[in-house]
Image 1 (tube, rainbow, N blue to C red):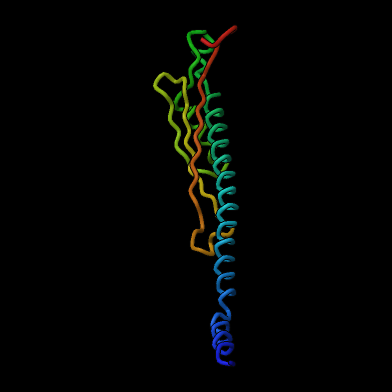
Image 2 (image 1 turned 135 degrees about the vertical axis):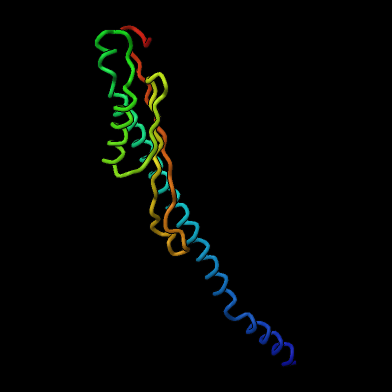
Length: 148
């Protein structure tokens, strides 16, 4: 009658360490998920910053209006060369690169910022940085009671 117990004991000993492997795999997966969540939040913050820098650069460029048209009252429009230069100067002072374009009528300035988010946890798996893009637009409006 000792035979059945010996077989049962052998079967139980064959599974020794199985739980440790399962826990190790689950731990690695859980750490990966936590890393992705934290890095996702960091990338969102970097994208928000890129958007804010693009909006401020567009605003800075939009302040470079053509003084001759503004003083005479013939129309408020940005001097495209000065507006573009002011926006690029703002991007340079913020330490980012981007692209600035002015509309043909000089009323709209569009800025696109390209930046990089350096990861904190994901370099362990080979992802050292992520690119982020921000967009900003400034439109010149003028008028006493409503924009013209």
